Length: 157
Image 1 (cartoon, rainbow, N blue to C red):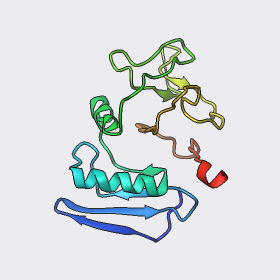
Image 2: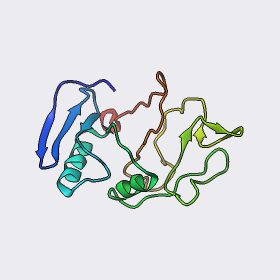
Image 3: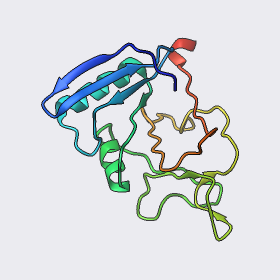
Image 4: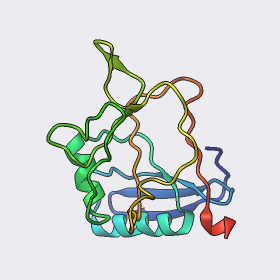
C-alpha cells in the first residue's frame, strides 16, 4: 500500500490517532491505536475512517484469537468461517476464524489457499446478505510478494 502525505489528525487523551489516505480510490493507514483497548471515541474515529476510505491498514497489532474476535464483534454479529479446501470448517473452538496460510504441519496444510494467489473475489458473496466487513490479520508475511489488492465497487459503479 503506497501512502500519500495527506493526513487527518485527531488528538486523544491516550495519544494521537493518524489516518493517512493512500491517495488512491480507497484505503488509508491508521496509526496510534491498539485494537485491544479502543475507547468509544477512538472506535468512532476508526469507523469514520473506514466509511471514508473503505479499506484500513492498521500495523503493529498484537492480537490473540480472542482479541481479534472481540474487536470484530464491535462491528456486528460474526459469521462462521466457510469450509476450507481440507474439509475443516474452522479453528477448533473458534468458528469465526478462517486461516489463510501456505504453512504445512506433517505434510498437511494448516489453512486455506496454499501457495497460490487467490483470484479476485468478494468474501462470502454467496450469502443472501454478505457481511459488511472482513478482517485480515497477518501473523507472518513474506519479505516480497503475498500482496493483497482491493477494488472499490463504489468507484466501479
